[in-house]
Length: 243
Ligand SMILES: O=C(O)[C@H](O)COP(=O)(O)O
Image 1: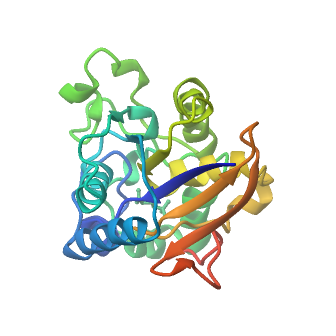
Image 2: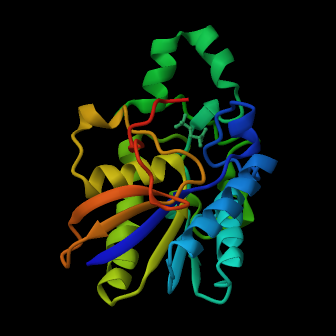
């Protein structure tokens, strides 16, 4: 049996301020630092060990991973970063307050922007200072930098990385940790559990909480659970309410 641990970064400063974040590179809040520290301790005390880790190009996920690996005395393992595990691009909504946006455009519209598989938020203009195409970290892959994304777009790129990089590592016996984002992990979970499109809107992944998937030799999921201090967390599911 193969185990993989997925973790959404700890609370970020913009999670705290309830702002659309997407590809904006916002750091952890003090609570997020603490969530990551606690997650590392939980993984350590439950006997988890990792051989390799994957994360995005965004510091809230990278720092969550660093803190966990530090807690586990595993800072030496190979860590691979990829834009393909970045959060879903939130287009022109990036930086806006979610509650204020709902007041302006209505709850239904904002819920669609946040949770529809097909609807994309309004796109960023190339001239917008928030556009990440001139950011040095994306040099050479400017054309891959989205101006907005729906969940399907995010899923497509995350699955390329899953199929080409993570899956071979799992098949070769590596114990894998992925520190990523709410929507990249929703996309992965949708793929792994074959969740239909109309079931995905209710699927929300809490910050800083290790989510364990047990997979068979063909990488088909057998079961999944969140991890707490004394093992599996009772009464939590990947369908916690949208906050
Ligand atoms: O990018 C963001 O704003 C969050 O990380 C995820 O937000 P969501 O819950 O609105 O998808």
